[in-house]
Length: 288
Image: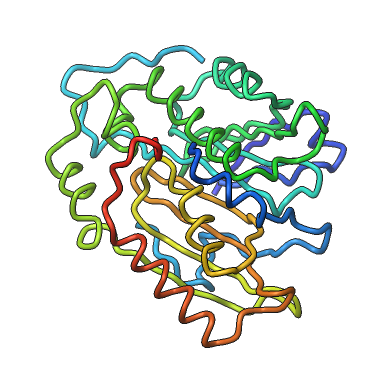
């Protein structure tokens, strides 16, 4: 698969990896949130077959009668593992993304330093734009789950604004977007247990933590809600990666209990707790 990468100076210096193809109730969670120590990052990506996770700024001209079957699936990856000093974000929407200047400005309004590190052209996924984000106040990567979710929703909101044809393929767009979602999309959002199944796997991840890999139906505020649900059973959460692929969300969290990996019994408690929580419909305004 042919790939052409245009890499800025930051990426050339080796600080970034090559490009590959919010709510008040969550404040209590922040006390349990721990940034990752600068240990060797996990090499596992959410699309890796080893985890058995199935794959389920100029306005674009939208042709009349646009069919969601032919529109590319929006994809946003928030990666905390690849770079020890910055949060890496990848944004893909086929070949329809422009320079993303509006997205960059919106992220700066969140108090972030934004460096557009690279752009890659891939015959399978289209144009992939990569950003390196740090907090302007500290110069460090983002370690706040509310801010991470704000980053994700800001990118989605800008994408919907400039590419309304993608709105019905995103959970927030299907709910609030300018285009009315198709009937099958509404069914997916309502009957998530049937149309978008939840998959949860927990693996060993070294002597001090475990790796939680989760796939479920996306919704606004999901990242914060997941952290709260995990922290409510006294499991410490370290953010790894959160992918938004259309209506599907994939999360990778490094988790531990009192500085140790989760034993089998606690793994089962965590899995059951998340399945119960994700089965419940959420329409609270605070989640949006």
